[in-house]
Image 1 (cartoon, helix red, strand yellow):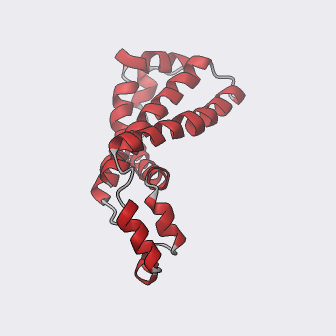
Image 2: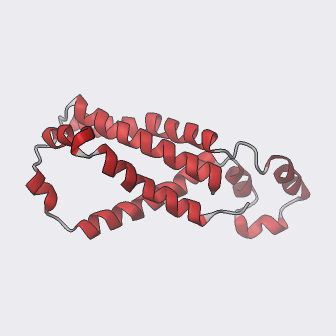
Image 3: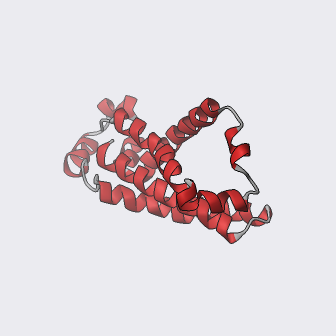
Length: 162
């Protein structure tokens, strides 16, 4: 199973692109700032290279996890011991991959798994943190919505093209 690292690198950019749109003042940015008691001046402070650079690195970490959630063949590769041991796998592995190596490798399928990851993993994590931090439902739903959309797009890119 070949991995398209360019697709993974592009999927990592999705977090920045969706964030640029999602948290724009004309979309949810003004509400988000109000819910966090932030001002435009406060947002202009900080090391933006560090913020965007680390965001991209964290996004790449997410792409690696999403790859295992969206590409089902990675489970078969794991069962033989991973990529280094594929050549020594039993003939049944090669037969399986010949029959199912490209099964469910579409943008649509990856987007479904990305959406489910957002809804059933990111949303509860954000919800739990938000509840304990005494944040509003607006805050929780803005962040959860961002991650649901982002993970949906990332999952689609990863499954369809990686």
